[in-house]
Structures are given as structure tokens and as C-alpha cells.
Length: 159
Image (cartoon, rainbow, N blue to C red; front, side, top):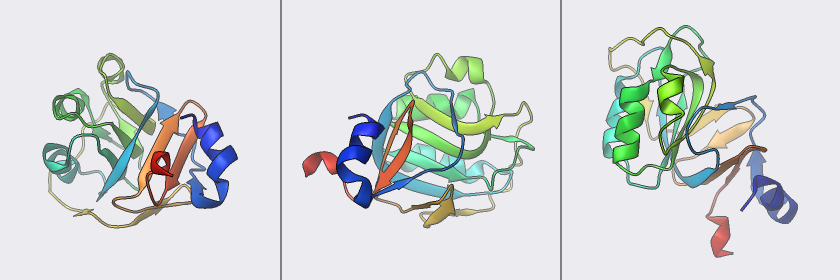
């Protein structure tokens, strides 16, 4: 279901992301339950989450909007594909965008940066994140298409 249609039908139940996130993955439309990671210029916990969250999940990475390095590249995106994840939303940057564009994965981010991140393992998982005017709660559902990103507390298709 399109995000515009969701807004027409369920606007009072939705949060609409206000950030200008760009699509980089081979899938431009994706949805699923949210898992979260909060990091700053360090993607160790991003990899850990990609390796452990259930298939069909959308990993939301709050990189605090940093454009100094990438938090997702082609190797981590490949892990997400192999595990059947629906997508990755990055409040920060990705790299290897040409390769990621060929993968059957939804990936949106603020932009790209060729610099790799630190590998210190700092950050947190499974927390409520706040960016783009949205409270990203683990277990809530996110819907993404070319018109935008909307979040609902429950899976809307069951209503």
C-alpha cells in the first residue's frame, strides 16, 4: 500500500518522517517491523543487528545525521539480503551505493560518504530513537516508498 494511501486512510495513527532521505537500494518500496540501533560513526552494532534481527524486519539506524563516514556498505547490505530483511533506514550515510542499488533490499539514507566507520562497538540497540520528527519504536511498523516514510504503532494491513 502506498504511503499516500496510508496517510489518506490512517493519518491520525501515523508519524511522517520529515527528513529528506534518499533511496539507494534495489527496492524503492518496503515495509516491516522496526528494529533499532543508535550509533555515532561506528557500525559494529549495525552489523550485529543485521546478523540477528528476524527476516522481514526494517533496521533503523540513528547515526545522529553524521556525514563523516558511512554506516552501511555493500558487505553489510549483502548480509541484510541474505537474511531476508525488508530494508535499512540510515540517519547518516552509506557507501558502495552502485552495488547496493543492484541488491533486492530497501535502503534509504541522508546521503553517501566513501569513508568507512570506526569499529569500536559503541552505541545501543533496541531503544526508542527520535529523528525526523518520528519516534522510532522497536516493533512499530514502517512503510517506505518514493513519496515518503510513515510509521504506525501497529501493522496497518490487519485493520
